[in-house]
Length: 96
Image 1: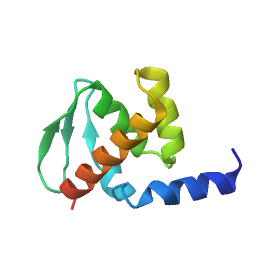
Image 2 (image 1 turned 120 degrees about the vertical axis):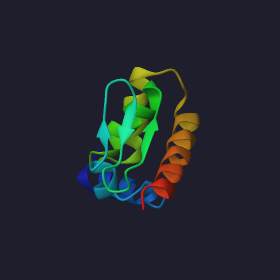
Image 3 (image 1 turned 180 degrees about the vertical axis):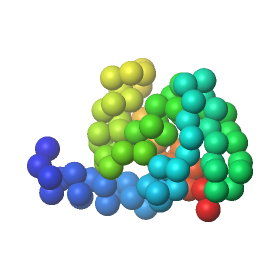
């Protein structure tokens, strides 16, 4: 993938992705405990949610996220992409 493709890819999913700075501030434990030090809220996620949060803390596009999730979990690309966008949308609503 060319660098221009990555930028275009990130823009396609960017509408659903939460602010990278907000995701980056989250403290994540291997057990799935998530803490937002700004709001004081804590959350619990499963292994898939934890993997997704770790990916969202990096500057990657949705295609790279889906590919990484496919390598670790079962699922076809369209379903994973839909799930990533839904998760990111919910997360964006929580991180204000």
